[in-house]
Image: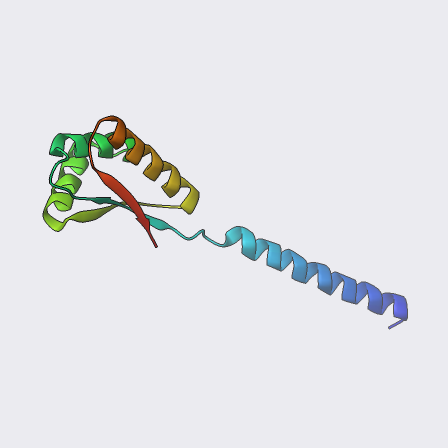
Length: 110
C-alpha cells in the first residue's frame, strides 16, 4: 500500500470509530429518576388524587390506588422521568400544594 492509501485507510477507520461512538450516544437511554409523593397527616386524600390526575396523568382508578399506597406506606413512586422532567413536575406539585395550603411534598430519588 502506498502512503496515500494507508492514510486513506486510517482516515476511514477513524471516521468509522467516530460514527460508532455517535451511534452509541444516540442509543444510550437516559437515566430515570423516581418521583415520590410523601404522606402527611393533613393533606386530604381527595387532594392527592387530584394531584395524581393533574400532574401525573393518572386516571381516577390509578390515582385512588396510588393515593392509598401513599397513605398506607407513607410514600410511593408515582412515576419515572428524566431529571429535567422530574424536577419540573416536582416543582409544579409542590407549588400547587403550597398555593392550596396543603403540606403535600414531592421528592426525587435515583
